[in-house]
Length: 235
Image (cartoon, rainbow, N blue to C red):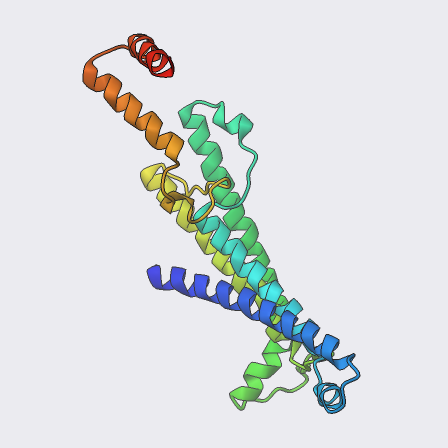
């Protein structure tokens, strides 16, 4: 499963990173094309980037579909569980299991219907044509306006992403049935914050607590004795 996890993460990173760079290049191209600089403006206008927006949309759609599967695996999706958390353990487990299996059923249905749509939208023709089989009256299918890619390739994100999401739901359900644990993501956590050095105030507070425990004093006794010491120093 680690290979699938890494492939999923690398695919999402590639899509979001590539789309960001492509948008930046398209904006820079549009800006430089408007500058009245001899040579540069002519060169910029000779570059056709009308396809950039369409490709960015396609990349974001694919990223969203596979990102949804990643969210199921890591527990990043937000859920309303106020009522469920108030149930006893047995009912809690039943409702959690039901929710995971319902998610698997829904995404599996979307994957099946999406696969049928993609097959009838041109994938049927493409596979038969590639294998050298008789296509007969099978429609070739439409293409995208700018890139002129077969639309079935673009729409393949629906069955592929939904199938992976269905698998992730089943994977989480199995792990929950076996261990009772669910993937959890702390939405308030910021990456890198755990690696920071403690603040000076926190270090002093920890030092005072250690000193108090070492001397065997209660918190009230320690504060009383140290308040006198500080008053003498102040005088």
